[in-house]
Length: 361
Image 1 (cartoon, rainbow, N blue to C red):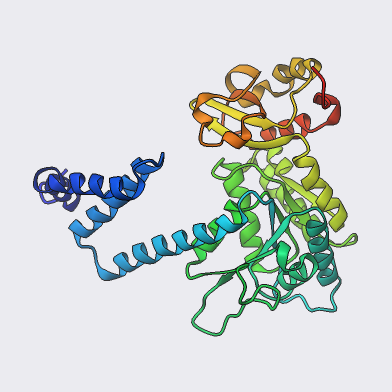
Image 2: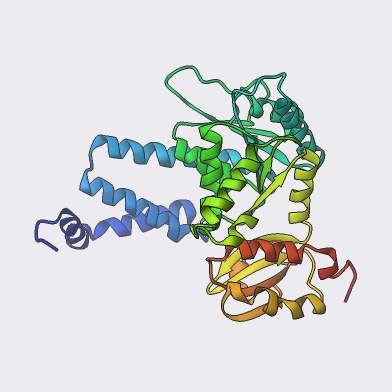
C-alpha cells in the first residue's frame, strides 16, 4: 500500500488520533441500549458513521448515507406494526386496465390472501397492484410506494393510511419487497416485473434471501410465463448457465386458488430456516417420521458439504427467538449452492406422510 493511500491515512488517524471516540460511543450506547443484545451492532454503526465524518466525504455521499439510514429506520419502525403477520408480495404491470382478465385475476388473488389471513404487499400503484389491494382490503394490504420528482400517488386502498409506506430509494424499496415476503407472486408485466422476477430468483439462488415460494401466476390459457420458462430451459439450463434443479425455485400457477395452495403447502410443516455456525436448520412445526428421516441421506445428501441430517430441538444460539422454541429443527451442513435441491427438500418435509401427526410420541 502506498504511503499516501487515503484509506491507510484514515486507518492511522483512527488508531492514533481518536482514542477518546470509542469510549464516548460506548458511553452513548450505555445510555440508550445498555441491555440490548444488539448493543455491539449499534456501536459498530456509530463508529462507521464517525469514520465517514473523519474522512469528511463529499456532501452527496453524506446525504446518501443519511437518507438511507433514516429511511430504513422509519421502515423498520412502521413494519413493527405488522410483525409476525404472514405476507405475500405481488408484482405485476401498473398498466393493466380494469376490464382486463388479469385485473380480475389479481383481485381474486388478493381475496384469497385475505381469506387465509395473509397480507398483500404491492408497489401501491395502479393495475395489478390496485386490483390486488381491492381484493385483499385495507387490513390485509401494504403498499410500498416510490417517491418520484413528478406526481406519484399510492392507490386509493392504502393512500394516507398506516398501510402506505413511501420510499425515496428504489434499492431500499426492493429490499423490503423481499425482506417482508413469505412468498412472491409474479403476474405478467413489463420490464419492471421481469426485473423483479430475475432479482428475486438471483437472491434466492445465491442464498442471499431466505427460501420462499416464487409463483408465476397467469390466466389458464396465458403464455407469458410459459414462454419465460421455455426460455429458461432452452437457453439457461441447456447451456449450463444454471443448475437443472434451479427451475424448482419457480412454480407456475393458472389460478389464484392454486397459487394460494402452493403458499399454504409450503408452510404446512416447514416454518422457517436459520444458519447457526456451520449448520443450516429447517424449523418444522412437527417432527419427521423415522421412515422419512431414513430417506434423507440418500435423497438429499448431495446438498450437504459433509455429514448428514439430524433432527433435534432448539439450540442455545436461538435465544433471541424464544417464541420458536417448541419447533423441531432439521440440521445439516448445507453447501449453499443447491438451492433448487433445498426447495425440493422443503417439499419433502411438507408431505403429510413424512411428518408426525399431532399427539404422536
